[in-house]
Image (cartoon, rainbow, N blue to C red; front, side, top):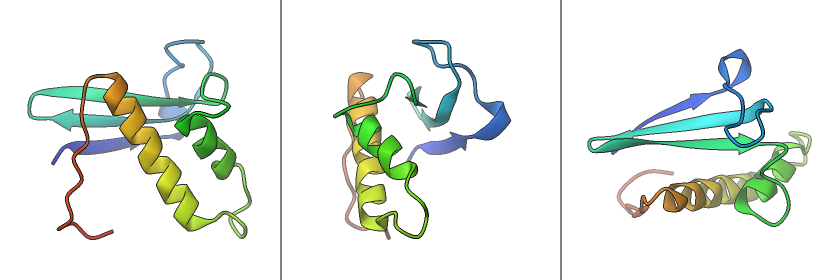
Length: 96
């Protein structure tokens, strides 16, 4: 299992693509390397997994569908890790 660090708030670096502030950053540390996933309100828009996640994040808490938020978060993580050459292999023995 990787060590996962979520960075939010004032500790966020700028987006590596557009230099604007990130929405958040997730850092995965594996035994054989590290992967970072950047979620940017400027770059990650539209019909991407990141765009769907951002749109869901913008909804008020009382109407944000928890199941879609989880689904879009996982899709964004899988898409971003795959773009860096990592492959997510789900484990059925872990709790939700």
